[in-house]
Image 1 (cartoon, helix red, strand yellow):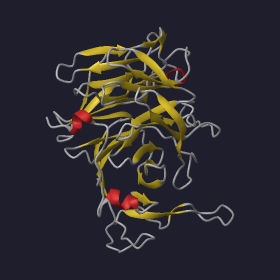
Image 2 (image 1 turned 90 degrees about the horizontal axis):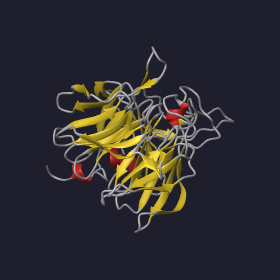
Image 3 (image 1 turned 180 degrees about the vertical axis):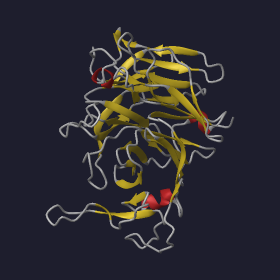
Image 4 (image 1 turned 180 degrees about the horizontal axis):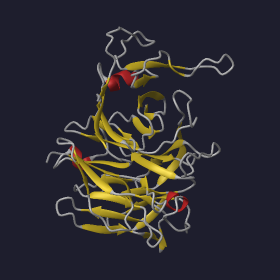
Length: 373
Protein backbone atom coordinates (compact mmCIF):
# COMPACT_ATOMS: atom_id res chain seq x y z
CA UNK A 1 0.00 0.00 0.00
CA UNK A 2 1.42 3.39 -1.03
CA UNK A 3 0.02 6.62 0.36
CA UNK A 4 0.38 9.47 -2.12
CA UNK A 5 -1.70 12.11 -3.88
CA UNK A 6 -2.52 11.59 -7.53
CA UNK A 7 -4.10 14.89 -8.56
CA UNK A 8 -0.82 16.35 -9.83
CA UNK A 9 -1.52 19.74 -8.26
CA UNK A 10 1.43 22.04 -7.62
CA UNK A 11 1.57 23.28 -4.05
CA UNK A 12 4.21 25.31 -2.23
CA UNK A 13 5.45 25.60 1.32
CA UNK A 14 5.42 29.03 2.99
CA UNK A 15 8.95 29.80 1.81
CA UNK A 16 8.04 29.08 -1.81
CA UNK A 17 9.57 25.62 -2.05
CA UNK A 18 7.38 22.98 -3.72
CA UNK A 19 5.63 20.51 -1.44
CA UNK A 20 5.77 16.82 -2.32
CA UNK A 21 2.42 15.43 -3.46
CA UNK A 22 1.97 13.46 -0.25
CA UNK A 23 2.91 16.38 2.05
CA UNK A 24 1.01 19.30 3.53
CA UNK A 25 1.88 22.40 5.55
CA UNK A 26 1.18 22.74 9.27
CA UNK A 27 -0.63 25.80 10.64
CA UNK A 28 -0.96 27.25 14.16
CA UNK A 29 -4.63 27.66 15.01
CA UNK A 30 -6.41 29.64 17.74
CA UNK A 31 -8.97 28.40 20.25
CA UNK A 32 -10.76 31.74 20.57
CA UNK A 33 -11.64 31.90 16.88
CA UNK A 34 -12.09 28.13 16.54
CA UNK A 35 -9.33 27.92 13.93
CA UNK A 36 -7.95 24.39 13.76
CA UNK A 37 -4.32 23.62 14.46
CA UNK A 38 -2.73 21.21 12.02
CA UNK A 39 -2.45 20.79 8.25
CA UNK A 40 -3.44 23.91 6.29
CA UNK A 41 -5.14 21.83 3.61
CA UNK A 42 -7.57 19.00 4.10
CA UNK A 43 -5.69 16.32 2.21
CA UNK A 44 -6.93 12.82 2.98
CA UNK A 45 -3.67 11.15 2.07
CA UNK A 46 -1.31 13.73 3.56
CA UNK A 47 1.34 11.49 5.10
CA UNK A 48 3.96 14.17 5.81
CA UNK A 49 3.17 17.38 7.71
CA UNK A 50 5.78 20.11 7.24
CA UNK A 51 6.44 22.66 10.01
CA UNK A 52 9.88 23.81 8.90
CA UNK A 53 11.52 23.81 5.44
CA UNK A 54 14.37 21.62 6.75
CA UNK A 55 11.85 18.76 6.82
CA UNK A 56 11.66 18.98 3.02
CA UNK A 57 15.40 18.22 2.87
CA UNK A 58 14.74 15.08 4.90
CA UNK A 59 11.79 13.96 2.76
CA UNK A 60 13.19 14.60 -0.70
CA UNK A 61 10.99 15.32 -3.70
CA UNK A 62 8.67 12.30 -3.63
CA UNK A 63 8.48 10.51 -0.25
CA UNK A 64 6.18 7.50 0.04
CA UNK A 65 5.00 5.69 3.15
CA UNK A 66 4.71 2.02 2.19
CA UNK A 67 3.16 -0.81 4.15
CA UNK A 68 5.64 -3.69 4.44
CA UNK A 69 3.51 -6.19 6.34
CA UNK A 70 0.53 -6.46 8.65
CA UNK A 71 1.74 -7.79 12.01
CA UNK A 72 1.55 -7.00 15.72
CA UNK A 73 4.83 -5.07 15.79
CA UNK A 74 5.13 -3.01 18.97
CA UNK A 75 8.74 -2.47 20.05
CA UNK A 76 12.27 -3.15 18.93
CA UNK A 77 13.21 -2.09 15.46
CA UNK A 78 16.70 -3.61 15.07
CA UNK A 79 18.05 -4.35 11.58
CA UNK A 80 20.40 -7.34 11.12
CA UNK A 81 22.21 -6.62 7.84
CA UNK A 82 23.76 -10.11 7.42
CA UNK A 83 20.36 -11.57 6.55
CA UNK A 84 18.39 -8.38 5.88
CA UNK A 85 16.13 -9.13 8.84
CA UNK A 86 14.31 -6.69 11.09
CA UNK A 87 13.76 -7.77 14.70
CA UNK A 88 10.86 -6.57 16.83
CA UNK A 89 8.59 -7.57 19.71
CA UNK A 90 4.83 -7.89 19.84
CA UNK A 91 2.69 -6.76 22.73
CA UNK A 92 -0.89 -7.95 23.12
CA UNK A 93 -3.50 -8.51 25.80
CA UNK A 94 -4.44 -12.17 26.10
CA UNK A 95 -8.18 -12.75 26.37
CA UNK A 96 -7.84 -15.83 28.57
CA UNK A 97 -5.74 -14.28 31.35
CA UNK A 98 -6.15 -10.55 30.78
CA UNK A 99 -2.37 -10.17 30.93
CA UNK A 100 0.17 -8.76 28.52
CA UNK A 101 1.86 -11.35 26.28
CA UNK A 102 4.94 -10.43 24.25
CA UNK A 103 6.93 -12.34 21.64
CA UNK A 104 10.25 -11.82 19.90
CA UNK A 105 9.81 -11.81 16.13
CA UNK A 106 11.63 -10.97 12.91
CA UNK A 107 10.63 -10.09 9.37
CA UNK A 108 12.74 -10.69 6.30
CA UNK A 109 12.76 -7.39 4.43
CA UNK A 110 13.07 -9.11 1.05
CA UNK A 111 10.42 -11.83 1.38
CA UNK A 112 8.26 -10.05 4.02
CA UNK A 113 7.94 -13.35 5.89
CA UNK A 114 7.41 -12.95 9.65
CA UNK A 115 8.91 -15.52 12.04
CA UNK A 116 8.05 -15.97 15.71
CA UNK A 117 11.22 -16.91 17.60
CA UNK A 118 10.96 -19.44 20.41
CA UNK A 119 11.59 -18.09 23.91
CA UNK A 120 11.22 -19.23 27.52
CA UNK A 121 7.71 -18.77 28.91
CA UNK A 122 8.69 -16.01 31.33
CA UNK A 123 10.44 -13.87 28.73
CA UNK A 124 8.69 -10.60 27.90
CA UNK A 125 10.85 -8.86 25.28
CA UNK A 126 10.44 -5.16 24.61
CA UNK A 127 13.08 -2.85 23.11
CA UNK A 128 16.22 -4.15 21.41
CA UNK A 129 19.36 -3.10 19.57
CA UNK A 130 22.35 -4.71 17.85
CA UNK A 131 25.61 -4.51 19.75
CA UNK A 132 28.90 -3.70 18.03
CA UNK A 133 29.47 -7.38 17.16
CA UNK A 134 26.07 -7.94 15.60
CA UNK A 135 24.45 -9.66 18.58
CA UNK A 136 20.90 -8.74 19.51
CA UNK A 137 20.59 -7.03 22.91
CA UNK A 138 17.03 -7.42 24.21
CA UNK A 139 15.28 -5.72 27.13
CA UNK A 140 13.40 -8.50 28.90
CA UNK A 141 10.77 -7.01 31.20
CA UNK A 142 10.52 -10.02 33.50
CA UNK A 143 7.42 -11.60 35.06
CA UNK A 144 5.76 -12.05 38.43
CA UNK A 145 8.28 -14.82 39.18
CA UNK A 146 11.38 -13.30 37.63
CA UNK A 147 12.88 -9.83 37.54
CA UNK A 148 13.69 -7.98 34.35
CA UNK A 149 17.05 -8.47 32.67
CA UNK A 150 19.17 -7.56 29.68
CA UNK A 151 19.71 -10.45 27.30
CA UNK A 152 22.26 -10.93 24.50
CA UNK A 153 21.41 -13.26 21.60
CA UNK A 154 24.03 -14.47 19.11
CA UNK A 155 22.05 -14.29 15.88
CA UNK A 156 24.34 -16.79 14.16
CA UNK A 157 23.91 -19.54 16.77
CA UNK A 158 20.81 -18.21 18.62
CA UNK A 159 22.63 -18.87 21.91
CA UNK A 160 21.48 -16.36 24.53
CA UNK A 161 23.07 -15.09 27.74
CA UNK A 162 22.04 -12.75 30.54
CA UNK A 163 24.13 -9.57 30.52
CA UNK A 164 22.72 -8.09 33.76
CA UNK A 165 19.66 -8.57 35.97
CA UNK A 166 20.22 -6.32 38.99
CA UNK A 167 21.73 -3.13 40.39
CA UNK A 168 23.49 -3.68 43.74
CA UNK A 169 21.39 -6.81 44.18
CA UNK A 170 18.10 -5.01 43.52
CA UNK A 171 16.14 -6.47 40.57
CA UNK A 172 15.32 -4.25 37.63
CA UNK A 173 11.71 -3.10 37.21
CA UNK A 174 10.86 -3.76 33.54
CA UNK A 175 13.72 -2.82 31.16
CA UNK A 176 12.22 -1.00 28.20
CA UNK A 177 14.73 0.13 25.57
CA UNK A 178 18.48 0.00 25.02
CA UNK A 179 21.27 1.60 23.05
CA UNK A 180 24.92 0.57 22.62
CA UNK A 181 27.73 3.11 22.71
CA UNK A 182 30.79 2.85 20.47
CA UNK A 183 32.84 1.68 23.46
CA UNK A 184 30.52 -1.32 23.78
CA UNK A 185 28.69 -0.24 26.94
CA UNK A 186 24.94 -0.91 27.03
CA UNK A 187 22.59 1.83 28.25
CA UNK A 188 18.93 1.13 29.00
CA UNK A 189 15.79 2.57 30.59
CA UNK A 190 13.91 0.83 33.39
CA UNK A 191 10.35 2.12 33.92
CA UNK A 192 7.70 0.39 36.02
CA UNK A 193 5.15 -0.39 33.29
CA UNK A 194 5.44 -4.11 34.03
CA UNK A 195 4.05 -3.59 37.51
CA UNK A 196 1.34 -1.21 36.28
CA UNK A 197 0.23 -3.76 33.68
CA UNK A 198 0.19 -6.61 36.17
CA UNK A 199 2.98 -8.90 34.95
CA UNK A 200 5.72 -7.65 37.33
CA UNK A 201 5.81 -7.28 41.10
CA UNK A 202 5.96 -3.93 42.92
CA UNK A 203 9.14 -2.02 42.03
CA UNK A 204 11.96 -2.09 44.56
CA UNK A 205 13.84 0.87 43.08
CA UNK A 206 13.12 4.17 41.31
CA UNK A 207 12.64 4.23 37.56
CA UNK A 208 16.20 4.87 36.41
CA UNK A 209 18.53 4.83 33.41
CA UNK A 210 21.44 2.36 33.68
CA UNK A 211 24.78 1.70 32.02
CA UNK A 212 26.36 -1.76 31.80
CA UNK A 213 30.13 -1.71 31.32
CA UNK A 214 32.00 -4.15 29.09
CA UNK A 215 32.76 -6.29 32.16
CA UNK A 216 29.12 -6.36 33.28
CA UNK A 217 29.19 -3.71 36.03
CA UNK A 218 25.85 -1.88 36.33
CA UNK A 219 25.69 1.83 37.24
CA UNK A 220 22.63 4.07 37.56
CA UNK A 221 23.36 7.17 35.48
CA UNK A 222 20.07 9.12 35.69
CA UNK A 223 16.79 9.24 37.61
CA UNK A 224 14.02 11.78 38.18
CA UNK A 225 11.80 10.40 35.42
CA UNK A 226 8.20 9.27 35.74
CA UNK A 227 8.50 6.55 33.08
CA UNK A 228 11.85 6.66 31.21
CA UNK A 229 11.32 4.99 27.86
CA UNK A 230 13.36 5.46 24.67
CA UNK A 231 16.96 6.62 24.56
CA UNK A 232 19.55 7.49 21.94
CA UNK A 233 22.99 9.05 21.69
CA UNK A 234 23.74 11.94 19.38
CA UNK A 235 25.96 11.09 16.41
CA UNK A 236 29.05 12.40 18.22
CA UNK A 237 27.94 10.68 21.46
CA UNK A 238 28.29 13.95 23.36
CA UNK A 239 24.59 13.98 24.23
CA UNK A 240 22.08 11.41 25.45
CA UNK A 241 18.35 11.81 24.75
CA UNK A 242 15.80 10.08 27.00
CA UNK A 243 12.03 10.12 26.49
CA UNK A 244 9.56 10.16 29.38
CA UNK A 245 6.11 8.70 28.72
CA UNK A 246 4.67 9.38 32.17
CA UNK A 247 1.61 10.92 30.49
CA UNK A 248 0.63 7.38 29.41
CA UNK A 249 -0.03 5.72 32.75
CA UNK A 250 0.29 2.21 31.28
CA UNK A 251 -3.40 1.27 31.13
CA UNK A 252 -5.07 1.30 27.72
CA UNK A 253 -6.81 4.63 27.06
CA UNK A 254 -5.81 6.28 30.35
CA UNK A 255 -3.60 9.38 30.53
CA UNK A 256 -2.44 11.87 33.16
CA UNK A 257 -1.94 15.37 31.77
CA UNK A 258 0.12 16.38 34.82
CA UNK A 259 2.85 13.85 33.95
CA UNK A 260 5.71 14.24 31.43
CA UNK A 261 5.38 13.82 27.67
CA UNK A 262 8.86 15.06 26.92
CA UNK A 263 12.43 14.42 25.80
CA UNK A 264 15.32 15.18 28.16
CA UNK A 265 18.88 15.66 26.96
CA UNK A 266 22.11 15.25 28.94
CA UNK A 267 25.72 16.05 28.22
CA UNK A 268 27.87 12.90 28.24
CA UNK A 269 31.21 13.35 30.00
CA UNK A 270 34.48 11.70 28.98
CA UNK A 271 34.05 9.45 32.03
CA UNK A 272 30.67 8.31 30.71
CA UNK A 273 28.61 10.08 33.36
CA UNK A 274 25.81 12.52 32.61
CA UNK A 275 25.61 16.23 33.41
CA UNK A 276 23.62 19.35 32.48
CA UNK A 277 20.16 17.79 32.35
CA UNK A 278 17.66 19.93 30.41
CA UNK A 279 14.45 19.79 28.39
CA UNK A 280 15.02 19.02 24.72
CA UNK A 281 11.38 19.03 23.61
CA UNK A 282 7.87 18.68 24.97
CA UNK A 283 5.82 16.53 22.60
CA UNK A 284 2.24 17.36 21.58
CA UNK A 285 -0.11 16.13 18.86
CA UNK A 286 0.17 17.96 15.54
CA UNK A 287 -3.57 18.43 15.03
CA UNK A 288 -4.51 18.60 18.71
CA UNK A 289 -6.61 15.44 18.53
CA UNK A 290 -7.01 12.77 21.23
CA UNK A 291 -5.26 12.21 23.57
CA UNK A 292 -4.20 15.84 23.25
CA UNK A 293 -0.57 15.35 24.25
CA UNK A 294 2.18 13.20 22.80
CA UNK A 295 3.61 9.93 24.10
CA UNK A 296 7.29 10.11 23.02
CA UNK A 297 8.35 6.47 22.99
CA UNK A 298 11.15 5.25 20.73
CA UNK A 299 13.85 7.68 19.64
CA UNK A 300 16.53 7.68 16.89
CA UNK A 301 19.11 10.18 15.60
CA UNK A 302 20.65 10.79 12.17
CA UNK A 303 24.17 11.93 11.31
CA UNK A 304 23.00 15.55 11.05
CA UNK A 305 21.96 15.31 14.74
CA UNK A 306 18.25 15.42 13.95
CA UNK A 307 16.02 13.52 16.37
CA UNK A 308 13.16 11.17 15.39
CA UNK A 309 10.53 10.31 18.01
CA UNK A 310 7.67 7.82 17.76
CA UNK A 311 4.41 8.99 19.28
CA UNK A 312 0.61 8.79 19.00
CA UNK A 313 0.33 10.67 15.69
CA UNK A 314 3.39 9.23 13.96
CA UNK A 315 7.09 10.01 13.90
CA UNK A 316 7.94 13.59 14.87
CA UNK A 317 11.27 15.03 13.78
CA UNK A 318 13.29 17.75 15.55
CA UNK A 319 16.53 19.52 14.73
CA UNK A 320 19.47 19.30 17.11
CA UNK A 321 18.19 22.29 19.11
CA UNK A 322 14.77 20.77 19.68
CA UNK A 323 12.92 22.73 16.98
CA UNK A 324 9.99 20.74 15.50
CA UNK A 325 10.53 20.11 11.78
CA UNK A 326 7.66 17.87 10.75
CA UNK A 327 5.63 14.71 11.15
CA UNK A 328 5.43 11.38 9.35
CA UNK A 329 1.74 10.63 9.89
CA UNK A 330 0.92 7.15 11.12
CA UNK A 331 -1.36 6.42 14.09
CA UNK A 332 -0.10 4.98 17.38
CA UNK A 333 3.57 4.57 16.54
CA UNK A 334 5.46 2.90 19.38
CA UNK A 335 8.92 2.49 17.87
CA UNK A 336 10.96 2.45 14.69
CA UNK A 337 14.37 1.61 13.30
CA UNK A 338 16.60 2.52 10.37
CA UNK A 339 17.70 -0.11 7.87
CA UNK A 340 19.16 -0.51 4.39
CA UNK A 341 22.65 -0.31 2.91
CA UNK A 342 22.67 3.47 3.33
CA UNK A 343 20.78 3.41 6.64
CA UNK A 344 18.26 5.77 5.08
CA UNK A 345 15.03 3.76 5.29
CA UNK A 346 12.93 4.23 8.41
CA UNK A 347 10.77 1.24 9.41
CA UNK A 348 7.81 2.26 11.58
CA UNK A 349 5.96 0.01 14.07
CA UNK A 350 2.43 0.75 15.25
CA UNK A 351 1.08 -2.55 16.68
CA UNK A 352 -0.79 -3.54 13.52
CA UNK A 353 1.72 -2.93 10.71
CA UNK A 354 5.34 -2.30 9.81
CA UNK A 355 5.61 0.50 7.25
CA UNK A 356 8.65 2.21 5.79
CA UNK A 357 9.76 5.42 4.13
CA UNK A 358 13.06 6.14 2.40
CA UNK A 359 14.53 9.45 3.56
CA UNK A 360 17.42 11.65 2.47
CA UNK A 361 19.37 10.96 5.68
CA UNK A 362 21.75 8.46 7.24
CA UNK A 363 21.06 6.97 10.68
CA UNK A 364 23.56 7.42 13.51
CA UNK A 365 24.50 5.03 16.31
CA UNK A 366 24.39 1.79 14.28
CA UNK A 367 28.03 0.72 14.31
CA UNK A 368 27.54 -2.87 13.19
CA UNK A 369 24.89 -2.14 10.58
CA UNK A 370 26.92 0.80 9.28
CA UNK A 371 29.99 -1.31 8.52
CA UNK A 372 30.47 -3.68 5.59
CA UNK A 373 29.59 -7.37 6.04
